[in-house]
Length: 255
Length: 332
Image 1 (spheres, each protein chain N blue to C red):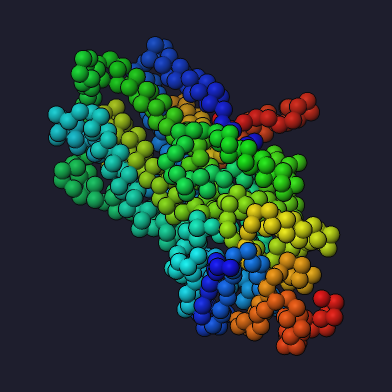
Image 2: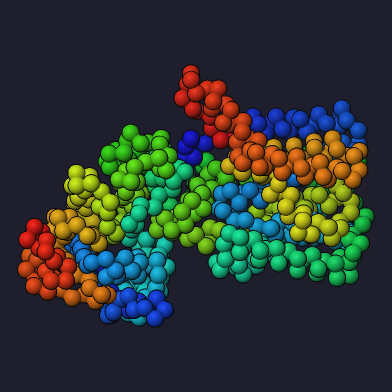
């Protein structure tokens, strides 16, 4: 199993506040690595650093063995990283289908910047691809609906579809089930599981919900006050007394 | 209302309507009206070029007067001093100057500032250009450039003498129609859709692999060079180029056209420019209160109809159609 993403000695300070302290994290091909930790542990900051939204204060990040520490987010996206946000970011005024079409076209434009600029409507192949993604994620009914009127969960699915349109190797999901009801949550987990398996993706996600964590993760790292305190297989992490103490707390028995 | 399926038939029939209207003018109206009509055609390009950056890429620029002025002065200088140059070369030089100025402004400010901050920076650069024009001897200082003659276009076999009769007017209409079509392509194609993404949610666009800084810069450079072209076409029409063109207050014109017509519509600024021209003409004899009247009317429209005239028409149309058939109106 080759290493897809490798972060070494990551520090991130916001002014005098040290958010990440010497974080090491790697992700092998086909692996599903879940980062857990209490609120304020630095999960989202780690996510931002890894995806290229912000630069680390110190440390190196490599993607497929290439140093991308100083590469902007869009460059990392172009080399195969899809990323979601805690609150789904989609183009609100566009219809669901248009959102995916813009994503497919972004991928095509990266590959061939000058091709098809004289074409006005989206190419047939692009539109077909978008339609099938829409159907695959169960959004076919929302085809013509502006994203702003979609529900929170539908927007998350739409964002996932846009990421899949990029044909990524690595999918980074920031709390994919945040703010969902238990039924929606289970459906989301099943969908992510299916999508990751069908597309042969590697997965890096942060999550709060222990059920989700243990269903999706093949490896778990626990972030606590900006440091990785434990990293290992789900069973190991679950058994770790330190983890029980700092994160799982009273609910450890249910997890 | 999808943006992925574009219907050229709607756009081209509207454009044909506008062009036909413009072509009738010389046959039914006097020279003064023909002159105004030519100015309106140039203003249509001026307005849409602004809106291409504003509505599609989310760039609010108050520098469009300087782009226009740079184009006009470039054409004015070359026509008066370098008369041997073909007019097409002069136009290209003007577009190049406008694009270069937009590039410099964009590189200077676009990454650092957005929204209102960027607008203020363009205002400052615009003021600098205005002062520069007023101080430079070869640009005529306060007096500007006079005697900017209408050129003769040498096509090898035929010569088009644009100085004769209404020839230059027809040239304006043809070139403006061409520029509007070019901008419509940029507005509607994959490039336009990605620009809309950049404006709608820059972070999402960036994590689709779109280089948002570059996209914004390209939008500004396109807007600047097309605006400069409009300025270059204007110079021989007015036959005089004055520093007022570079004054910041002139930058409010395309914004006004856009808000009046509706920024969400490609032809919004065109409708705004035409309405403004009509308003200006209707109040021409009311010296002194003309500006007041025009300003008041515009204020009323902008305040009471935030989506512009086309936005109002669209919602009225939707209300009429609502009971019978589902909404289907496309954005031209």
